[in-house]
Length: 328
Length: 285
Image 1 (spheres, rainbow over the protein chains, first blue to last red):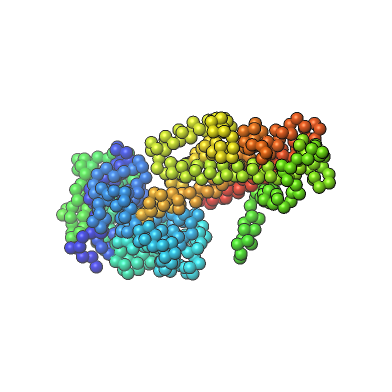
Image 2: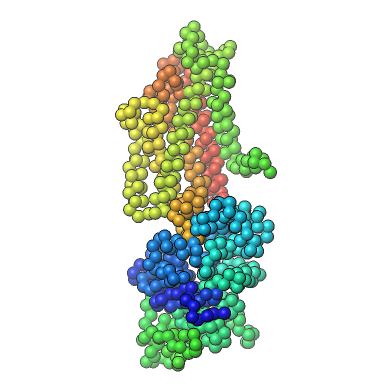
């Protein structure tokens, strides 16, 4: 379903995000999402995936800011956009779904009105038209009794309902790209499956591109076409989902998959990665993962791992690994 | 459910101080509105044969030093006091909330400048500014409203700014930004509606203060001018006759107190309730 010749919907080149000028939170991020494709951005907490997502639509809370690189969404360069152009992109090209759906809804605004806001602002719909359209959208995302629900307030909705409302709001402007930042983390498992099913259905119907941010690998294998693995603010491996899940090359990806519940029941023990992710203010020479990496620990002395950062190595078509141990 | 039934249910859910204040406040407002119907006399018609007469006959509260009916004067005088207080309060809240919330949202040098202006204005007692303006443009209804609004908006600006800063960090503002909402739209649709509850609580609490300030200015002879009168002016006039006819002092004094108290009680009730739901909310998350 992915056509290589088409211009990507989202293109991020050499993106650096820092706290002020000093502390790098994300470094050298290259990312591409093609039309109709789902790309999963994976990593543990603190790996910089949410910060990366927020930077895409210029939502970084100060003092975080983009210090280098370019972000292009549907041909519009976000990093150089004027406030008006930025608003236009936000209202017409991108939708975003967040982790905590209930706190994303204005407590004093009826949900139907909130869903219709983008239409009112960007499509020139009147208040009544926007509300009608919002009801339609709510129905589309599977909210029962949509006309009545549209008149309710955020606190009257369950978490799953609130997330559906957020998805309806994100879809209201008919976007090309949907950024979903841990859309199901706050929901329980059965609702998770429904929400993911909904996202998948909308993607097919609307040929949406989805950037899915998650730490849950089972979601990744179910939803994504391609996977990008982040660790401590940098990308360590990226490639098609089958390759990454079946034959991961980077030691961190391997460890991540070993830690997840997805592995076929073996010994019954769950693996874990020793140590924790380094805070962004600690500078680590060489590969950021080497203090926790079994491979680097085995090689010990004179290891390049501790002295210089690995470049991307292409192991197969579309599969890049940032690791010294991987031979092209 | 009809609108009326819903309002009644809403009222009954509030704290008892709100209900008590609402009740006595409504009685006062009804009396003032119905003044022409329920007072049998003209408030400025003098009858010197009835000077300083105590209550009796169809003069329910008696007569003042010029033989004017006290009950009628109380009702018509109250209209002036309450209208000036309510109008200045309304202007103060509107101006203060808009300026404050706007400053809180944009931040930076403009915010800093406006807030320093607020600091300066807030350090002047309202009554001093009012005296100053009255000295320049003369006493009267317009001057009174202008003077009290000029200083009155500042506490609301400060409050609204604080709330706007708090709301700005909420997730739903980010969500609105993602939808491509403009600054003004977010301010009017998402920031101010969510700030209204705490601001309304403060509005009620300030009403009593306004009423007393209006009374004080009239007492000093700087408010309403004769032959019109209000509660403050009535107090001032009655001063010398307080011993012979204490009711002349008590009646306007009690009227000011009851009105101020009932609105303050409403505000307090709202605040208690807001506090309660805030604690409930934070307890949950």
